[in-house]
Image (cartoon, rainbow, N blue to C red):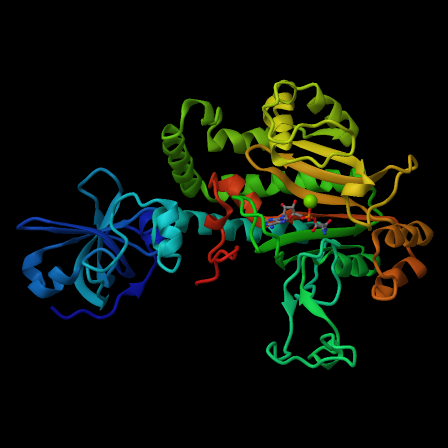
Length: 485
Ligand code: 4AD
Ligand code: MG
């Protein structure tokens, strides 16, 4: 039988919109094949939707070797007629008229089998894991969230600014940066006193990968009023946790004429908007991930199980006003809390001024308030130099947003716009005014109150997808010892 090429469509279209009786061509990868004497069922998936499309073929009409080579992982191009499905599962299936085998997958070697693989194992084959249900769902949701980020800001008149990835400044003053150099590291240019001579390097100065686009975003906020960055950031910190990456994406809005309260309002609206968008546009994926999280939870010990499903967690965030309390109030709550008194926390809270760990943040959110929490007015010693100083001389207008399961998801502040206060704080922190002369200029010329925050995109995806480890929500994770793919 000779057929013309039918119109190419994706599985999502066939499953959701295509009329019975229409003729189509679909391409995808084989998930499973079941065969009996008179019929072959092939489930293929093209990543457009979580569900597989069932192909039905009469083995009499096809070459025996072709059918044999249709194994899990192989790539097919199938043409045929959309028919009502005889079985349960789905409404329609494709009755095959022509099957082209685009790429074989030797079943003895193909590492993905139609069974449950651990996320740890799949991380070792990150190049193939998007072909699994879990990862395809996560990455479709990631896409939707990314789109919704731009949509949210665009609708509010914010401008997207692409801040540089290579930078000569250390925005957070944290010093955990990756150096960028074109010097010959075995034999670098040296100064007369023997130090590496960066003036001979490509940029004629020391440069690193950025840890944040904030300082540059501030320059644009003091010109375009409301802006945001959304780009990769890099931190050479050695935290080998399920919440840290060496390369992660951050969304950083920066707004002139916003005080800390305006900043909190924006952040809360923003987080809720994205979650609502995903609930509305990624129904099948969230349903799948919700079931997955429930199964995962069942395998945990009694005490470690979550008291909320993924869907309940998402609704918990959109349906609650975030609790806003000062750092000082939080310390008092934590000091008097049961796990602190019974020494159940790994880090016992003793004094005002202590940096909070995620165990403390989670206690406040999950046990004490039972809603997302915004902590503000932190001690200046544990925050960056650019945060606006309060009258008490001890605290700054910082705010962190704390979420269930994760702890800190957003960090931000009102910025110090007063030149004298800023330079005094920079001196205390040992940050050079000369190097940041361009940043200082914004305070010198037409300074204005302004605020901003940073959302760790992957942490937010973890929350929305219920995935436990941050390495499983970014296509190719970069962490200590991890840059294979
Ligand atoms: O709190 P951070 O360090 O804040 C800043 O970088 C500010 N410049 C933001 C701003 O005000 N414009 O980082 C912001 C967020 C954190 O709350 C966390 O969600 C995420 O970025 N984050 C990380 N995510 C993954 N891996 C890491 N190593 C991260 N470090 C921070
Ligand atoms: Mg922070």
